[in-house]
Length: 534
Image 1: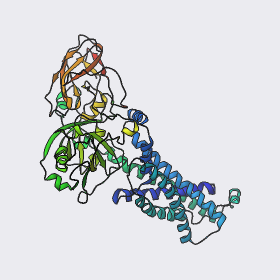
Image 2 (image 1 turned 135 degrees about the vertical axis):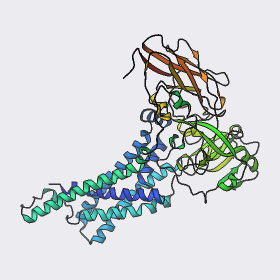
Image 3 (image 1 turned 90 degrees about the vertical axis):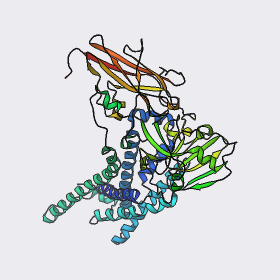
Image 4 (image 1 turned 180 degrees about the vertical axis):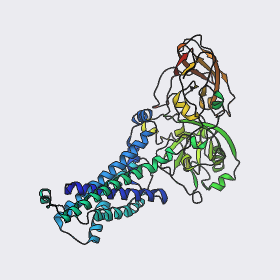
């Protein structure tokens, strides 16, 4: 027999699952607060950059997903405990009508979860403003009424929990008892299914978009044509790294861009105002500062927008300006030096690959800053401010580099490196046949460009020049190719290094992404067989 306390916990768990589903639906349709999202956001806010870097390196995209899933589970468990608290409380304070019970249990859940939400809210507010306090207190109301209704319904035939209930002897079996037993079994099955559905729906709502995300077409590892044709990354395959569980949805009709600070002519621009300015189309590669050597957090796209320097010139930016600060709708902020802001290649982009920015990539407006890691290319921009001092942005406050210039890096895609291959859809393999072996990959150094790429087939003892494919612009990755004729079957170690446009050779020193970006050679161990591989 299930104890009254356990039954109360399971009922709270099931009712909490229903509340979580409704809360998630509200969050995804009309906005507001989904408490597990706010909890995960708070965790990100408090996590030092050095710890975050290790999590990203070891868990990849699961670093953020696992925090969110853990928050969903903890919220469900909290609902279970609220169910226990409620029934113990009711056991001490008497009974009431069904409506009174629903109101009381709903109020208890709302009161406790609001305390948790407000604590998370003010902790997160120290760094960003993803939600407002009115949104928090209002959008928590409907789910708690669902919680109260389901909780009381599941326990409608159950007397209040008293300490003596724990010692009650079950009634003798009979027709009536058997019917009650069957009813209890059905209720337990319902509770279990409701819990699974509630927690699962909250998790799957976030994960399904990742699972259904279209991937690149697969191709054989020995066919570099499939790789070389992908100089532009399709929008659906472009990496996404930001501080949000769900990307913020912005209404472009009510959105505006404020330009303020050390400017003679502060102004507010609409999206149509920007679209009516001189348009620039430009290819840029973006790479996340958390990317490891030969990692998959990199992509190239065509960006359409206006030059940031045109906007600043129209606003009359003052000579004393040292930094330009971008602030986003999700509370994220970052600053770039005025010299970067006034370069021709620095854009305020509203299109990506010939179409309006997708929500997850910064709709309606984002920054494209050649030469600086992705964290400086702010998404969902709502304001630009000119200041006369260095500005520490969201990630800089967590220890990441202020001067976040791209490290010179290169990687081997063919023969297979599984991480970079996932960007291009190349079926990775480290086994090849004896004979001419095509070798290909990419190199990137931001706006410094690439002047030379060399490969080694003996672990770095000797180096041979590779052929470079003309890049799409001065701001994109460079593809390279080479041919290798192994002298005999056996084990070989391939390595690659690049030299940037300023003559600086890529360093062999291995550094983790934190705080300035990963460095070191990409090395792939290759097995050469004298006969065809199966």
